[in-house]
Length: 137
Image (tube, rainbow, N blue to C red; front, side, top):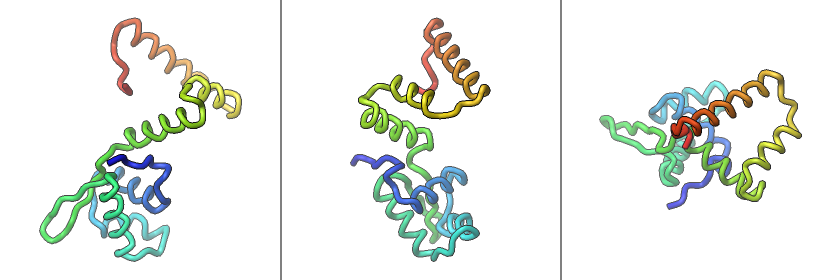
């Protein structure tokens, strides 16, 4: 089964997933408590959302007594990587450099952000020179 990219999930599904990533695992009630200050949602709404996320491969559950405890099946990093690859393929004709160029041209990057980019590039060059694999690969 192919998991939909995170940007194709509904807003509530993404919020629930973000809460699970923060908590690492949680019951319906715990997720509801994290959303409740912001929204007036029913327990059954969160339960249905978690069940849908589980059906779609985004989370798993284990039984603890009579309660289900949900946890993410994919990390935040895995979710963002899949979405980014989809974006690069669909929008930038599978050319990551074109995406970076677009960001450089379109965004007002601060000197600190530009320095961070320079440091990332230098780190990547050093890894290649030393033969060390990248941690993001």
